[in-house]
Length: 531
Ligand code: F6P
Image (cartoon, rainbow, N blue to C red):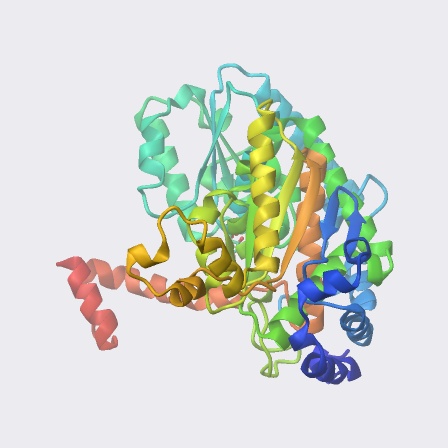
């Protein structure tokens, strides 16, 4: 098993980057090749991708594909699908794909489908109860971000009479204002935690239960359910209705398991099954399509190209759909918790960079915040636009404005504007430059755009349960692809442990004021916060 830097393709790509890749100019590339859009756009189930505005050419792709082959991407993918240990530092298989496979077609099918059937039957029962007006999911990380993102994205499929809330933060400013709006008799709490030990979730679960009792709530069994792999801990907490899942489902990949219960309640069982079907369609695409037209593979390779050859440190995600406003936050966990690693599978320190910073906000809001930097800042940041052809509202003019904005941004990033063009435009300014007391040449430099800034545009026909499932699975497999090339374990998250342990040690000190043996900064801050 080779790491990307140990392949012949890596050296070839370095040479290619120095000779051609660094200088590639998108404007020239489009001028040279009228078929560029056609060549570089790809269809996958539910998701169309235009990669033509990326800094790539045929040679780049050829070397990247060679690298994937040398790193045995296909073998590693097949090993994951067939339940081999793909998370070696935790000794676990990685089988979130089995959660969305039709009955009888993947490993663990019987157990998966019996929990799924029970969970969906429960979801439909809750939907049919007019007396339940509020569902509160208490969970954090993968037990929060996925269902929250998806419930918002698929709001058009939700029912207005039932609100779904998400409480995650140990900061009680999260739960307290929410509880003030609720009544015990009309509230269902879902305690969502793979481990059922997470500090934040357990603290909020206790607050919720205390509130329920103190407000005269009757029958906690009817108003608290759990989604967890730790059924015993849920029972010890006093919950008897539990929907389980398994250690081969990573937290950030658990949306397809019982952790999806809030989504299932929101959109109903039929739609939830469509959501799983969309993801499964993408699984089949990833498993069976040749690498050169395999969208998750191509996106993962592009991530390696940008991170390790161009040296780009981040990627910005701009979903042009308000419902996808939590997608960037969801992707931060998916990508950065998975691939934010600095040693390879054998424990050797990596000589190259791994996960980029992933960040973003929905368009068009993002345009009025940080797009200035994307267009004219000193860093080149590849942008990923997500456009939805058909909206779920009927305000078509507004939708046209949204789409025009989306297209304009990727066009502007690519085309840019020279100082000469800016100067020519300035002649039509209502207020002549001289009147502002400015040198025209200076001003036109401020008003010029370098252009040649890369972007990808993903297009969905509509934001449906099926297409959202496909989109999320696309991201999962893309992260897997870059993780394989980087030679890392994308499925553990040891980096969150140290802070948790230190927090446990500091909590009693914050209560007692004991600062003995602490570094002076931590001691000083602790005293300041206690005073
Ligand atoms: O702290 C990180 C993490 O372990 C994530 O990987 C996980 O999604 C989150 O905490 C929540 O964990 P749990 O579902 O066990 O409460």
